[in-house]
Image (cartoon, rainbow, N blue to C red):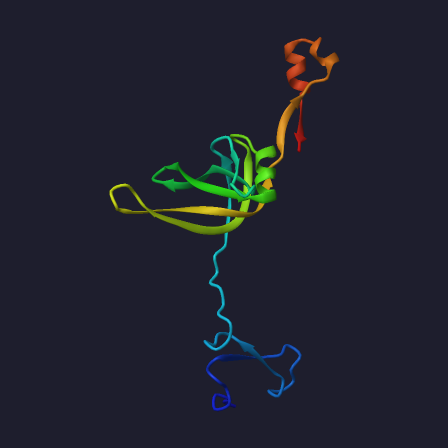
Amino acid sequence: MNFNHRIKPCYEYILSPMATNTRHLYRLSIFNAKEKKMNDLNSILIEGNLAQEPKYRTTPRGTPLCTFPIATNRFYRQDEGTEKETSFFNIEAWAKHADICNNHGKKGRGVRIVGRLKQDRWQDSEGKAQSKIVIIAEHVEFRPEFRKNRPADEEAETAESAETEESLVPTF
């Protein structure tokens, strides 16, 4: 059966998973100019390492802001070897995320960021239009740091035995 004669162009109809016949249609609004406009999808998930120490400051209104670049690596095959491509991205973390990044972030530490892209536009002193894209962090996770843990009694042992008994302990 064709139901196109009953369907308005601003709605999409789907069949209910529990439907036994076509009477169980659900109407989904996909877009209508008279309704509220939908946001476009602007989401990014990126994982890498901090390329510099985070820079922490507050705005004139007192809102914390932490900025830092992260480096991401991509490995791919070319000819008979493996190539490495490194890309750098600027991150801005605001409010509580800025405090977390300032307290836990340090150069080289692994981080996963979920956020959105933001384009800043301005004109330079010569009047040319300039722009840059930054990632606004909406969720930040740091990878655990591993450090070597050596109890005091182990320091007295020889270097060879101490190296074999070292354990990696995550610090948070």
